Structures are given as C-alpha cells and as structure tokens.
Image (tube, rainbow, N blue to C red; front, top):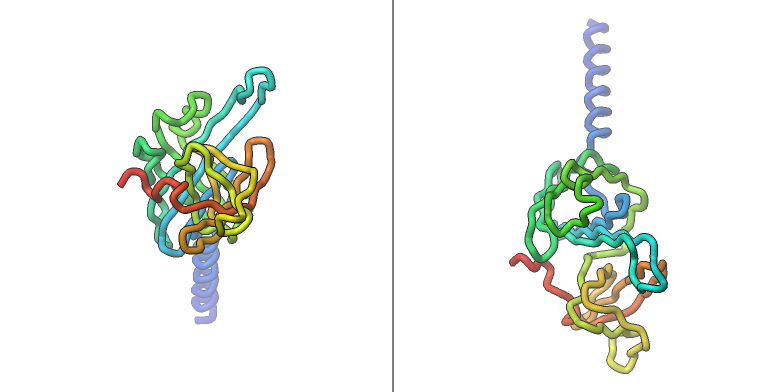
Length: 204
C-alpha cells in the first residue's frame, strides 16, 4: 500500500514539473530581434527590426529589415495566427514555452537575406522581459512632430517619419506617450498625436 502511494505521489510531481516546463504563457519582451507585446485585451503586437553596416557616403544601411505583425491571443494558446504588414500576409507565432517562440512566415515583404530563416521557422529566446509598454504603433504622418508633454505648446525640435516604429507607453485623450529607438541607438521618450499613427490593424 505504501509503495502504491509513493508511486502515485512521484507520478503527480513528475506531471506537475512537466506542465511547468512546457508553460504556454506568453510574456511581453524582446525575443531576439523581435519586440513582442501582449496586452490585457488579448491583442498581440510584434515588430522585427534589424539594421547593419551604415554607409556614411550613401546615407543608408547595407542590410536593413523591418516588418510588423499582429493578432489575437488568449492564455494557453500554443499557436497564434498573425497578419504581417499592410499586405496582410499570413504568419504564425508558435509558443514553445514562456521563454521561447518560433516565428514563421513566407510573406514576400520579409527581407530576402533572412527569408529562409522565417520560412523554416525562426526561433527566438526571451532576452529582456518588459512591462511598461501597452502597445506598438507605426507612424503614418510624413513628418511626425514630437512633444515634451501632451499639449501643443510643448512641441520639440525633434520629429520621426512615416514608417517608423514606436512603442506606446501611455494614452491621454488625443495624445500618446511613446518610446522611439533610432537605428543608431538613440532613445526618445516623447508625446505624439493619436492621428499620427496608423490604425491598430491595417487589414481590417
């Protein structure tokens, strides 16, 4: 009888350990070169951005790749279907556990030199959890002015341009507090107008 109880307890502990190690809970953070945000309303936002080999003479990067994706996610999901860029190509986010994801897509908009990696499935490890970002956005204005506080009088000399990716930290009426990281490592913490952003999902 004691042996049966001992075996049952051992099996129960083993099962619990297995469930813990294969957790499908998704956390917001930086996974490799991907920035992934999961908010409380079940929306999922992601960005991939990579820059390498700046040419001072030509004023551009030799290798530059950026795209975004979004979808819906609920606790326990292991595969999330997402749309990639405004072309609305399909992609999949495979959640291995709470620190590892695989991003897979054959979208034509993904850069050629990393295309094969994304077609096979690009595995990313969580390298930095974050909890201060509520959403991600893409600038739609040709020249988006940056403000030091949410009012017209607080306009600064800085600006960002159409297509730039921003992280949204806070919202206040018609204003958004954003964080912008330039390809050169500069970080801006400013306010912009909500109308400067594309809608949440361009595929709607």
